[in-house]
Image (cartoon, one colour):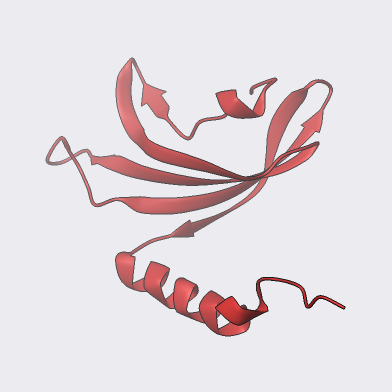
Length: 102
C-alpha cells in the first residue's frame, strides 16, 4: 500500500522475482479516490518470458493515510482494447469535448 498516488504500482514480485512488470502508468484522476491506467507485462512461468502488453484500470481509495485498491478492470488483448476505445469514441465524440459557449 502507498501513501502517495505517484508511488502506486502494478509491479508484483514473488521470491524476489519480477512477475508483473509495469511498462507505463497514467493517472486519470487524483484525490481521495484515484483512477490509474497501467500498461504491464506478465511473466509466463513456462517460458520465463514476459508476454504481450496488457492494460489494467484500477480504482483506489485513500483511507487511514494509505491508498487501497477498490476495483480493477483488465483489458486482456489489443482487440478488446480497441473495442473499448471505439465505444468510448462513439459515446464521447471529439466535437463534444469543449462545452458550448453562450
